[in-house]
Length: 68
Image 1 (cartoon, one colour):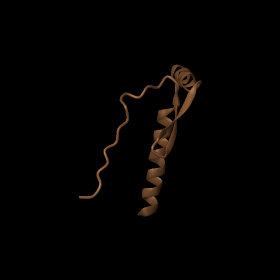
Image 2 (cartoon, one colour):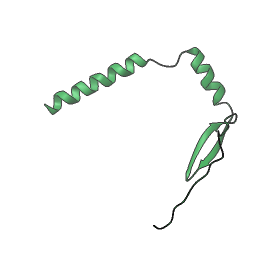
Image 3 (cartoon, helix red, strand yellow):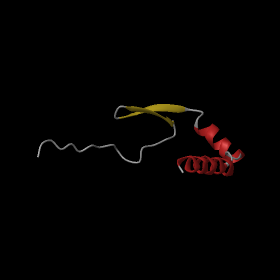
């Protein structure tokens, strides 16, 4: 029974990938434009690459609670 489930899962994944296709020409153009100039921002310990035109929607803030 486990083998049948694995086969069905693989078939479902293959169908999903085939149905999605890839980005169309307009989407490719937008992706190329957004990734032309990027900058690296730090969030906590993580570094992420964002387009230079990216603006944070609000100032980051953290509330820390110590003890009980």
